[in-house]
Image (cartoon, rainbow, N blue to C red; front, top):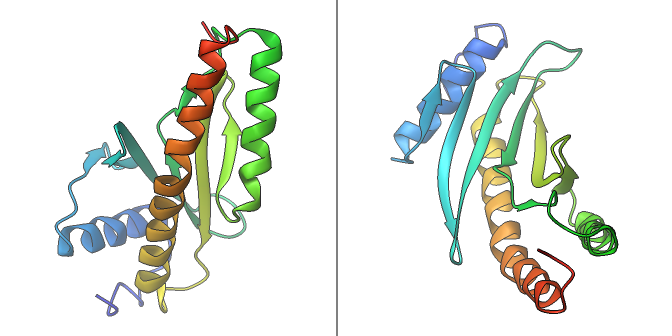
Length: 158
């Protein structure tokens, strides 16, 4: 696959073609949404998440974005529990390049990005980032969910 479209310009379309080809070659199940993003169903512990992969080439440097479907919905969480939980998740951001982020809808997601400066070595870098993302979440998510459950039992989450 390293003979990827090296002669092609790096655009959202060529990046999406590259990503789907890499996933197809490894028999990774995914859903393609109108060429705008790829959703990879993933099971971690007892939780089923989708990894959302997007190609972005509209800025100065193109990149591949990898994020999870929402991990936690904070809309029904009391203010002090929400603040404590969000502070805890932000403290986990030391696991660079993985970041926990709060969406405008008060949902927590995990996300990372991979700069795409050239086609050279992109397959290895993409697979390494995807693997790192999965491994980190596989390690952290069960512990985070236990903390959330403990907070729920104390009456902080509804």
